[in-house]
Length: 160
Image (cartoon, rainbow, N blue to C red; front, side, top):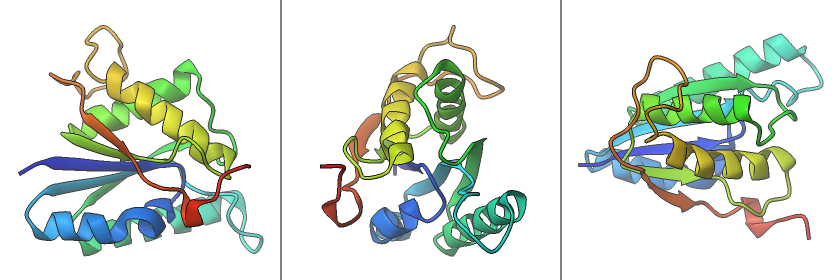
């Protein structure tokens, strides 16, 4: 059986784009892990940033638990995901934590800037996850670069 990691920018992105696939894979006995780069704290006009982030991370954890998956968040700022070294190290640590054989990532062409940056970061972090001297945190470097696949953007929408 394989270990599969789905990475996207915000809580609910994975659920909208890959929940069915992940549920089928989990039901077949594969290990599924889900990670977001942000808590999605800008996603509400009725609660403040901290409350919104806490609610959305709890929802993502609960959704992951429905299929027996683990969930983690890198806690990068919502609408502040950029392809820089600090963010790449955070994404790399998520991949090392999950130790996946396969990674599902955001589409490189998407309507949302966080989604596109998450795609680039995840692509780069897949490579970096196997580089022992690229230090990120407690999780060790992987023995091999995981296989990377991109999910389609919501409704096939991109910026053009």
